[in-house]
Length: 124
Image (cartoon, rainbow, N blue to C red; front, side, top):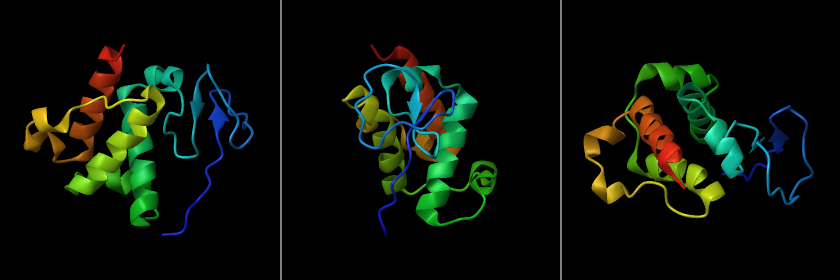
């Protein structure tokens, strides 16, 4: 898979310089994934699902992100780990210990997004 460079954007939609160090503020990548802790904490449950579906549609090379979010299709375990890593990165640590979560909670995008949203809210 060819590596794609995603332009970072602030919450106001202004692009930041590639590779620029951003210590504060809400910065998201092209798919809506958070790049800072402030960005992750500002996300609603709906925005977490939206960001995950956009990222998955790019990973799967599917044209319509809404199809992934609404289809309720089963997620591959590697896809789940990849999505979790996207949200772990701004915090610099693992938010969810996957060994302590029932497998049925990984069944679809809405469940995974719910777990991520809950873990962001409780992360210190």
